[in-house]
Structure formats: structure tokens, C-alpha cells
Length: 95
Length: 487
Image (cartoon, rainbow over all chains, first blue to last red; front, top):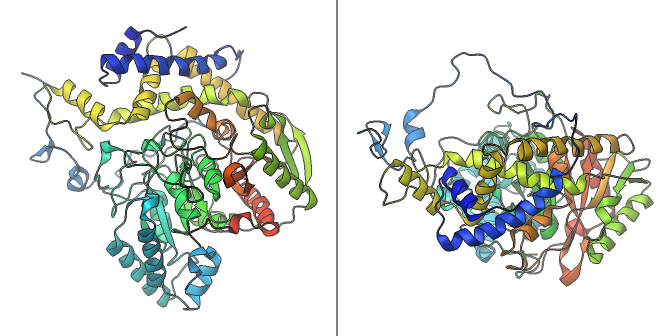
């Protein structure tokens, strides 16, 4: 199954990445090469095999719901591209 | 002082303890070498005032009698680990100039032992690549041959240690990003069991695979530093809770009787004859040392690449969704609205390879495709891991090549992502299983470029793997050779 230019446009939209018309064709060719490689694992019979999400199993650990360390708000915000009154500034979303 | 830059960590530690050299003098020696070899482009951020302040603190600590064996030993960190005192960019324009409010746990642990940070090392953008050509800040040159790639993604780490401009460097491995550059650059690269080193503060690529490790001159150096680097971290939800371990404790265990599994699938048609010759010679060396070579099979290993190129991009597309130009990172200058700002910021800030992997990941995770791709990949991943478990009932250590060929030239594979991906044929299976694995120098192949021998052990058997490597390094001198111009 090969991808189409429509697929590329759709996933680029999902991923919030802009692709020009010219890039789109080259990207399509590369993605199809990658999916041709991936196809090799799709034929494998995996009936009854548990998916492996962590090499050592056990799932993710939860911690106690207690106050731990205090987050230094100023330090954490110092890399923000735009700030106002201790808040992250973004373009207007709701009119 | 003249040969200190090439000395082992144990020797440097001894000289510091005997006051034959100070931490400040050592730091200055390596800072001078970094400056003298700027053309390698191994370092992205060097701040001598920070390094020398840490070295002064290390000397004071030693004088106060509170030193560890690593106090005053210089180290450089791959720019995937965030640091308070140096910029942390993951070699991406997206994070240009980013100053982290905290240190990664790995950095913190090594700092707590008294190690002195020399700076931050170049790598492939977000650790995605096998040649270091995906860095937004330029190629790292291979000290053995400046026309060859140093490997990737930890290419700055491998080149720095090969050139002896850092005695040790941190690195990270998701599908081979420690072992492949170690092999290409002729140094010792060690990846411990997944979950043992903390991922806290390691800029995430594929969270179920990302593992911190080291580039060193030798297995002995790796064992010493690793003992101070890993440990349970409550801040990492997949951190493994195990007591601290002295990874040097088995170093002198004899090789006699050691069962070394040789996977026949690692010696197929794809393996270049020069690499095969060097690797087979290393296996013969082990046999002469008393090891028993056992023929083993890992029939699903070849599925590693397709499985990896579903799992890694899927997790990458999820992890890199945090780069939206809102809280940190690059923000586009001109945009129409919030969505446009996010889209333009990502388009401008991310390089071609991260974008490609994000797109593959977005596709395999999109509605209707999840079961066919991501879930199927996780199932085949378990088949591969099960084969390793089975193999370790027949042997103690698995040995084979790290790469199919020696380091390639710049540009040779850059236009063809799939051929680049194939570089990781022998390293990906161990990453998917999550087992300890490493690369040690075992000779030279075509054009005088280094060859690596891969060693792998079962979960948590790092000490045994390092011991096997150390015994080889006691019997051979490949790991002591320094490229011309860097002696």
C-alpha cells in the first residue's frame, strides 16, 4: 500500500508541519520507501503475543499524591518567547 | 602533563589523589585541547569560567577529604542532557540558546560525584541520525579520517573521546546511537539496561527506548563512571528500582569458561568483509583466552529495523508535539493566528529528519492505523526480546559486529533515509530488547577506519559485559590507539 499526496497533506496537518508542493513530492517518495521497509514486519504472525511497551514490563509507576518539590515559576518561564504578568502570551484564540 | 590527556580515569584519579595534578590543571588541559581542535566541531557550548569554577570546587572538596574517585575528572555531556550552566539545544534550531532551569539526573549524579563539565557535545538533531549530519550546527568530523562521518547520533561524544579532548562523555542510545558512533570513531561505547539510567532531563525522542550511556577510552573507565551515573530516580516513571552497583567488581573475572554466543544472523550477506575479518579475529582472541564460542540464532533480529521505524517515529511524533512555540523554543515571527504560529514555528525550528519521523509517526498513530502499525510493532518487539532471553539460556555474552561496514563518507547516505537507517541493523535488536550492549574497538577496516565489536548481555548484567570487554582490552591494544594529530 503506497501513500498518496493527500495522505502527506493530511499527516502534515495532523503534525502541524507545513510542506510546500515541491517538498511534498520528495517527502512522499521518502515516506513510501520507509513504509516499504515497515511492511516487512506486518506479515509476521503475532497471534497471542502481548505487545511490549516497556522492556522490563510492569507498566508505569505512580507516586503518592502529596506535595513534592516546588516549581520555580520564574525559572521555568525564562525561556518563553513571549510573557506578560507571569503568563505565556499567545495570539488571541477567543474573540 | 604531556600525556595526561590520554590517561585512564583510574590514573587521572590517582594523580589527583597524590596531588600530582589539580582538577583546575586537568580542566585547563582539556579546555586547551578543545580549543586546539575546534575544527572537529564536537562541542556546541564551552564556557571555561563555568568549567574552571567547578574544577576549583573539586580541588576544595579533595582538600577537605570528601573526594570520590571521580572528583576533579572532566566530562563532556551530549547536548541531549539538559544543563543549568550550559545551553541545551538537542542540536536543533528549535532550542537555540535554551537554558534549562535544572540539570538532568545523569548530569546531577556525575556532578555530585565531583566530575567537572567541559561543555556540551554536538549530535544529530534530537538524537535522530546515524552520521551526525542531521545536526543544525554542522557536521562533526571523525578524528581518524576527516572525510568520514563520526557516526551518530552521539557523534560529538565519540569524536571528543577519540581525539582525547575529553576523557569521557555521556551519550544516549535509542537504536544504536552510542554503539554505532563508538565503532565508527574507535572508542568504547556503553549502553546499560533500559530504565537503569534516569531519563529525567534527557530530551525525549522515543521514550520506551531512550537510554543514557557513556563514551570512554576503555571498559574499565566505563565501569567506574557508570557506577556513579545510574540509579533509581523517582522523577522518571520508567526508572528501575535497584540498589546501587559497583560495575567494576567483576573486571578481573577470567574469561575462561565464558560462553560467548555468536548470532549467525549477524554474519549475513550485508556484512562487509573487512568488518567481518576484524570481528572474527576478536572472537578468535576470546577463544584463545579460554572462552567458548556458541553458535546461536536470533531469527527475528532482521525485523528490528521495520519494528524500530514504527515505534521510534510514533513516540517521536508524540514527544516532539511539545514544541509549539508557546512555552519555550523557537517562535515564528509572522503568523495569522495560534494554529498558524504553531505550524510555522515547528516548520522553521525543526530539521528534515525530525520532520520526516514526525510524519511517519503521525501516520502510524492516526485513526485506523494504530493496530496495524504501532501495536503490531510492539508485538514483534516482544518476539525479538524473547529470542534474546532464549539465547541467554545458551550463553553469557553475545558478540558480533556493531555495523555492517566502517564509517562512510559525508554525503554518502544523506539523500537516502532508508540506506541510512540500515546502518543500525545490528544495534537495533538490543535496543528493542532493552539489554546492556556496548562497542569496543577491535581493529581497522577499509581506508584505515575503525571497526567495533559488539557485546551484549542479559538484563542487569552490565558488570559481566564490562568484564568481558576489559579482559579483551587487557589482551589487545586497539583501544589505546590515538588518531594521528591527536597524540
